[in-house]
Image 1: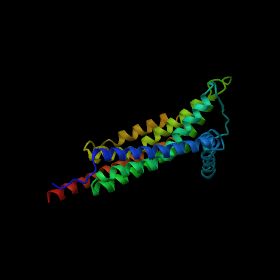
Image 2: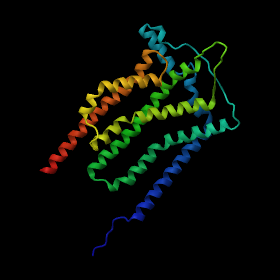
Image 3: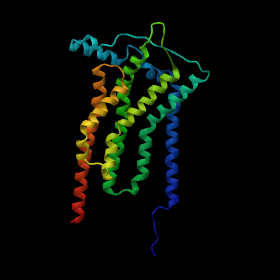
Image 4: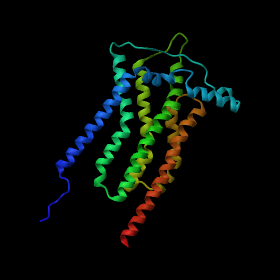
Length: 272
């Protein structure tokens, strides 16, 4: 009997352990880098809390160009406080931890791709690699949209909102960092809608016709979601949030439709 040279279960387990160890090492290195560069890390995180943030200045330039001075955000000032003994150190660890994950994510995904690659067929390898790269890029787009558009205008509205002149807003450190990190995660996950649509289409759960049929309902849900995420009250900011999510929905329709065509072609080739 010919010997089987294919890797055993324990060989796969050893390779998976190596992948995990390499990923953890890179993650730890990114974490330590951001932990040491504390000043630059928190300059980046607290930039949206300043009235000189790039998004506000671009809005003012756009307001001048459109001759709509109301679009230009007025200057504001918000102070931050810390009322817990270890909160600043914990927040430092938390920010470096998640920031290190974001920096290390391309390497981690590459390692996982290399581990799964030998078990895939040639056709599956092409699509699997494209899906992974698309998932990373879409997640980063969602995070950047939150950082430059959604969070700044949401923070400006809520951070300066007053029910009475005698009540001064002093935002806690943990509240601010928790909000920017959680909203970034939510927007990153929302931008994975096309990836989810791709897998649902492959499993036969959804079709392009189904998504087209419920397009109006989806647009209404997107507008409501955008209004909840950005309670600023102006239509321009609402549009800035709604339009990208709507475009993701339209992209999902195209992906599902294309997946249906590929599946049909594959079935025809198989029958032939």
